[in-house]
Figure 1 (cartoon, rainbow, N blue to C red):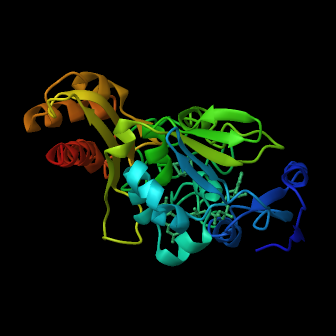
Figure 2 (cartoon, protein in one colour):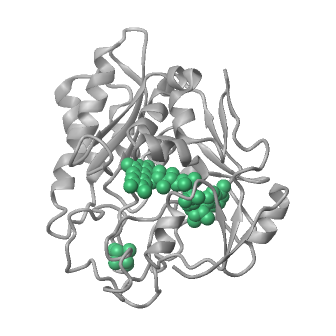
Figure 3 (cartoon, rainbow, N blue to C red):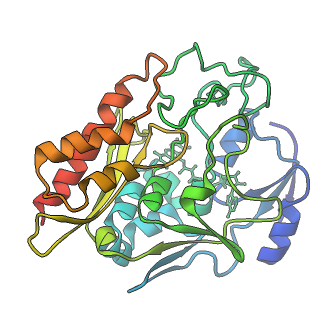
Length: 327
Ligand SMILES: Cc1cc2nc3c(=O)[nH]c(=O)nc-3n(C[C@H](O)[C@H](O)[C@H](O)COP(=O)(O)OP(=O)(O)OC[C@H]3O[C@@H](n4cnc5c(N)ncnc54)[C@H](O)[C@@H]3O)c2cc1C
Ligand code: SF4
């Protein structure tokens, strides 16, 4: 780990200006950034500590939706009674992320900005080829060990999986990220790797995440987050699904459906073709299982990650049917 300097700005504007300088990085909970600095992936020359900035840790929920400040802690949001009742999938996604200790430190701004867990990306001393770390250097994962890599949204330059849980749920419910005055759909905030996998987010120098806004909806109120992983806690998703559903008055015909996938794609993955196929249909197990396969149309595996193409539709169908049982 290299030496770096430390700066504690007095305002959001001062933080943005400082973070725009070459080599400067924002420090929130530090649970990702310090890890990346230790393994030599992040090499900040200045850490801009934003942990104390006022007004950025609010959690406000009303009939229109929720606004959550970038410095709100993952654990506090997961525990918030209004989030639990209005956005169960958001609370469940956070509950199943990381560990209690990390959730008590980590912020949602930092959570959205977390980097891939691709082992080649995180091991620069042994693997110099990584287009995400060093554009143009190649990809050590392609032809390597790929069990945790993505099957959707990949490119010839990078097949790294986006590992976060919260963003998957946010994408399902059309949340927006506030970058000061500028607002973007979370779906548009995450970029596909294409030929530039080093650029992961639509955030510009001098911008920082200030808040997340999630519109309220009947589908968000009847929602869940199902995460399948190698062990039951403290593990990233092998495949996960954030699902929200609204039924017509008959309690069986689907009026609205939101589905996003985690653990299988290079960014949080909204399954719009599947949503369109099921809206207006009566929910039946076979219909849900058949339509769930639409979520992985176009998927490409690299050998050891083939199981994700089989697993993801099952996770989605199980989550949809679970919500149907409570109708
Ligand atoms: C062992 C382990 C297991 C984990 N398991 C999971 C899991 O299962 N699911 C999951 O979703 N996550 C998981 N995580 C990731 C964890 O959720 C993140 O480490 C955490 O959310 C990062 O938040 P932070 O506040 O600590 O960010 P920091 O480490 O402080 O920052 C992370 C990055 O975000 C930038 N940043 C921070 N705040 C802002 C802002 N407001 N605007 C712009 N940029 C900003 C920083 O400059 C840095 O680049 C795990 C992490 C660890 C270490
Ligand atoms: S998959 Fe992406 S992050 Fe992993 S080694 Fe290849 S280029 Fe790097």
